[in-house]
Image (cartoon, rainbow, N blue to C red):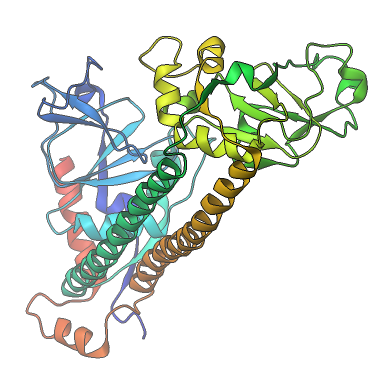
Length: 411
């Protein structure tokens, strides 16, 4: 399909920008009961809600653009912004279709960490092809229809993800029911912390082959290797220590504790930093059994063992060591772990299928946009219908009208 009657333009032909100064929120004491959203252009988008009534942007619809990351968001409701990094983009003419331009920006999306005024210096000058007005409206309508269907599918996938999380918790809860004897973690084995060898001494780090665990390494159930390694010379000359294979590792201090309590099992002898506590279990315990019990109770641990009891950013070591674990025979522990892992392995397979489907959905979204701006989204029949519209004219004529109105508005 050829792009007949399309014309090349730049984003600055269709969009002007407003500096956000008068629209920046004064107080960041947000409250969900307030009416006016405070926006950023990134994934968070709505940072919170304010009760400030002055400096509320209401020339809608519009696009907000982050000058540091090039992230953008289409907005069709009144708002304030979080920072001066936001450019508020407004149409240069009433003939400009803002949703269409927003979709064009997504196709041209790039990230830059080097331009502090990226809209002015680079993005506004990016070129793309503009279709005739009726065709433009038809493209936007078809994109939004396809996206709506896609979003419904994504919502179903995310619902399934949530159901899997609920099922996982139910499996872990049921697995330990009926075990009456409880033992504090402090009595389950030998506890050790860790430390960081001096970064100024190359001999402690250069060509090291001993895994050295930090909080960013505790992402999976088992740890076989790490991002960084130390040499054997570092161990007697710093506060780090040898941690035995099959030890349980706990992240005790990290921003991630606001969401999860990372736990892992060391699958080789290694060392840890000062943000990790470890326990090498005695002969009464199977490490996988204790791991699954604690993982099933990680939310309770985060809150009951939090140092300040509110925002969880660190776990109190004494509180964690006092946490009770149900004790049964080693044979029963192995049976329970087998039961848990056989059930959760099915969850893992389903969860991977969902993750793959979500990734494909995102790729399909980009494919739809790519086709739209290659002139391949509309069928021949749909294009023929556009050409019958009374407002149909080559995009070059439309672009001249837009530029004329832009110049008139500047006078």
